[in-house]
Length: 250
View 1: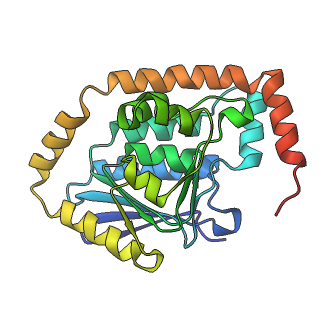
View 2 (view 1 turned 90 degrees about the horizontal axis):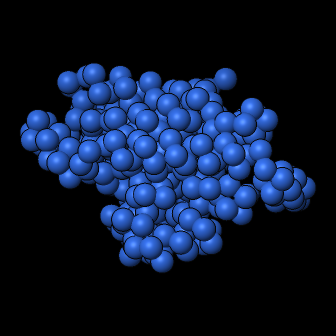
């Protein structure tokens, strides 16, 4: 069985590839743990200057694995591996680049908010259908997205669950550039390598100054997680999940 998260070094860049294409890269608890461990390991490696996250051709990440997610619902919590990953994103000290080709759903979109640079292919789609499942935003998105886009666009994305295509993602600042699908990995590697080649301490200090005190973001992640856990046990969420699971699969 192949590893669901592949890690390789490209010079001073750690490349993390979501490798579960048969399940549209839906994240399991084990995948969250693997990503967390990889980020923490990269932070301890002075030879690395950047981290790049890739999906598979045509799909970046379809969100949470539904079986794991049902398990979280039954336990009434967001899940330790998920919170561990979110906190690792906030604590991360290395510049983080993402390349999105195809769908980025739920956590597939909200993890992009923690990246320093993001590219999208022309077929990228970003969506956060939390409220449609009677849940609430996560990963600090309720704090980051209004700051990034303004309140009304944030409402459109996080509450209305509207899908943003690549052009809209670029217009709203969710991604830096839109490139052809066939070029996205090469272009993303070039960006990450260019960042990794810069003076490391100057990059780290500049990044820390721009991001500011992480405590407010960590507090929001915890606040969202508590609300998420409460919603998981609600009658609304149970009805929404039953409706979702009863839909014919395309």
